[in-house]
Amino acid sequence: MDIGKDLVAASATPLVLAILSEGESYGYAIIKRVDELSGGELQWTDGMLYPVLHRLERNGLVEAVWGKSESGRRRKYYRLTDRGSEELANQQRQWKVVSETLRSTPFMSFQLTPQGI
Amino acid sequence: MAREADARVLEERIREWRSYVQRRQAIDATDVDELEDHLRNEVADLQKSGLDQEEAFLIGVKRLGELDALSREFAREHSERLWKRLVVAGTEAGTASFGREALVALGLAVAAALAVKVPELFGMRLDGSTGAESFYARNVSLLVLPFLAGFFAWKRGLESGDLIRLAAPFLAGALALNLYPFVRGGSTEILAAVHLPMGLWFAVGFGYAGGAWRDHDQRMNFVRFSGEWFIYFVLIALGGGVLMMFTMFIFSAIGLDAEWLLESWILPCGAAGAVIVAGWLVEAKQSVIENMAPVLTMLFTPLFVVMLLAFLGTMVWTGSGIAVEREVLIGFDLLLVLVVGLLLYSISARDPHAEPGLFDGLQLVLVICALLVDAMALWAILARISVFGFTPNRVAALGENLILVVNLAWSAVLYTKFLRRRAGFAPLERWQTAYLPVYAAWAWIVVLVFPLVFQFQ
Image (cartoon, rainbow over all chains, first blue to last red; front, side, top):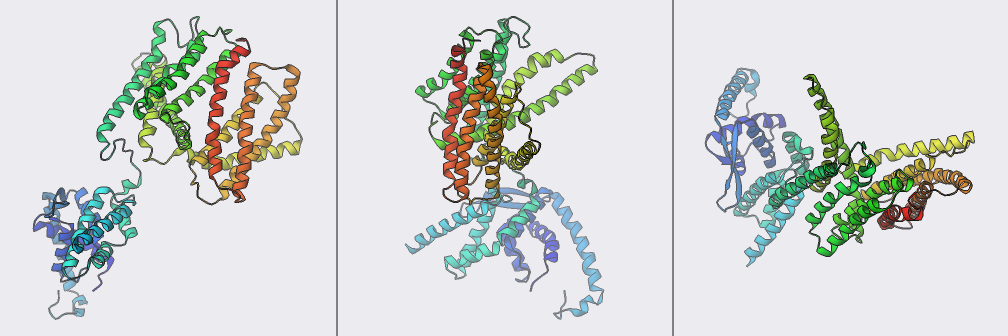
């Protein structure tokens, strides 16, 4: 399924923060995790993840360290900061409001699958 | 075996991909490292799922996203990267040597600043209030430029033979200007004092080229260096002016007059130090910042063309000739210097393989206009000289005029050939670099030979 550009952009921050709340990770693994969680439905252009990560880093929501991969190459790992956890909670509340509002509109009667969202 | 070859091919492809991505200004080296790690993971996973390496690589690159879009995203996050940053430090290996270079440059700048003050210990005055008032006027370039030449001698690691050749002009200039029995305030003294910095600047060029002054590329690099150095110097001077203004202002607020401090220390020492610092900065930033001299050239060439055309048109329209005043010849010399400068700097920044364009045509018009204007001025001046005879000033001005006219005339011929596609651009570039020693030779003739010929008048 093709998901609109705006929605992808809007969901990128909470998704990345949520995935990082599971523990330290790096770009490729984050992409894989998104793929896995969405059952392959949510396809990102891989490269676009990095500007997002850099923005989160600049805003202090994640911190990055250069480490080594299994094969000994340089790899940049990202980790959630305290402020990142706060932001994640904040985002959770926002998305909850949005999804609950959507759920109580006729919007959901167009659901494609029997179990809904 | 096949797997080893495969791995080699992959490394080669990743290297190509890296250099391709790195050309994007918004994506810096560490980003590329990060993207490379991603690409490698992707390729490895795709290969595990049964694709061959070539397919895996292609798909991996494709999944990273189209480079234009990607670099736009990076630019949005890192907009500051679109402004080139002055990384005075070498990024990787150069770091250690940078620290030393900065120290050497700053040390030489301080030395030059102090050197300017040393003659005062022996009673020479900057403001000319004692008998030897012209000492500074004659020697100031000898006090400062050796340090700039020294910087390049150190940086390029000149051999002892070249060091002697580099020192010789400074020695010759110092001897001539201080031992020749000049008539105080006479033309030959003033001419020598004015031409010595030019002559010495070419000596600096010898150091800049690391002794390889015959090399045309090195000569062109020195031309570029000179233009950028000048611009840096002017900018530093502007900053220095602001600094001095505030010093005056702040001290006057507490009732102290800081003028003596500015005049006798900050201004002369700052200017001397700025000569070295500007040289060092141009050397350090070379590849980081767009060259300014060619940009200014682009801006001003059309404006000067318009000005000269308007002048020629007015002259034809009103029928008025050039009034030969004392300064006229010098004024027209300066005009030619300017046109040669515009020509030189547009050549220095031009891609020699590019096709002739509008701007080249404009250059030719500029050169021809300058030649026409100068021809008329020369005509008027020659008539005057035949009446009033030769003086050092007239001969010097006339000689300079001839040198510049020859350069421009032949440049016009080469430009015409180039525009009509009879020849490439390279001859034009080579003509300019081949001509540089003529300027140097003339400057030294005025310094060393003129006083003898005109009996130090």
